Amino acid sequence: NAGVTQTPKFQVLKTGQSMTLQCAQDMNHEYMSWYRQDPGMGLRLIHYSVGAGITDQGEVPNGYNVSRSTTEDFPLRLLSAAPSQTSVYFCASSPRAGGLSNNQPQHFGDGTRLSIL
Amino acid sequence: GESVGLHLPTLSVQEGDNSIINCAYSNSASDYFIWYKQESGKGPQFIIDIRSNMDKRQGQRVTVLLNKTVKHLSLQIAATQPGDSAVYFCAGFGTGTYKYIFGTGTRLKVLA
View 1 (tube, rainbow over the protein chains, first blue to last red):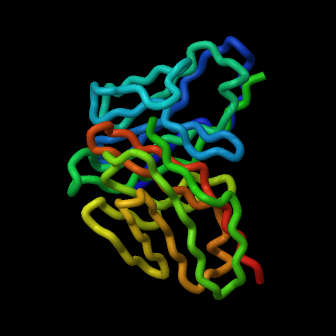
View 2 (cartoon, rainbow over the protein chains, first blue to last red):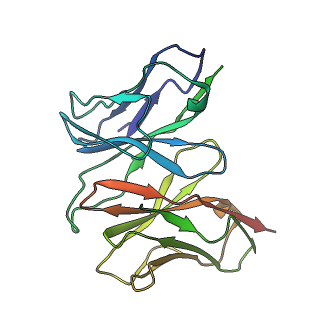
């Protein structure tokens, strides 16, 4: 059981380039989310999905797109990279979300460290 | 807007002492709270959670207390060990919003 797998682990981009950060989970979790973590700050929610075919925006969605065509995969796309997007990106999943008795903690990947020059 | 904040950025404790890390939240609609531990270079790891219909929950060496009246959450670590050195985050989840909101984190340093 691999849990949440993020690729790549490290990436350097030039301003204006595009790329996709991959996230896959093998736990059949319904809820998946992307966060960015900047130095001295907590995790800020970029986008999330409550199930295949359903996505929504978090706190800081600008400059990022997501899709959820399968339960397992939740890729994050940077359309035109900017230096302000230099950060560590974490993907997380949980079995389901919603309903007081249903909530369970998220499982996190090990992150993608992204630098934009 | 919603926010989840922590009172102290750094907490230093002697090995063997108890640690208390505090967290305040602003959204009354948050009904599920989680504490995570993050070690350098790794993703957050789940420690303990609590639902809004509870005041206290205990795990192995950890206890979470929830005071909904003042919107305050705390994590207590008993007999703190060097391996507990890390950054600790609280997160709140609102069922209506489907969003987890994280605090900025408290760095726990365990002194030998």
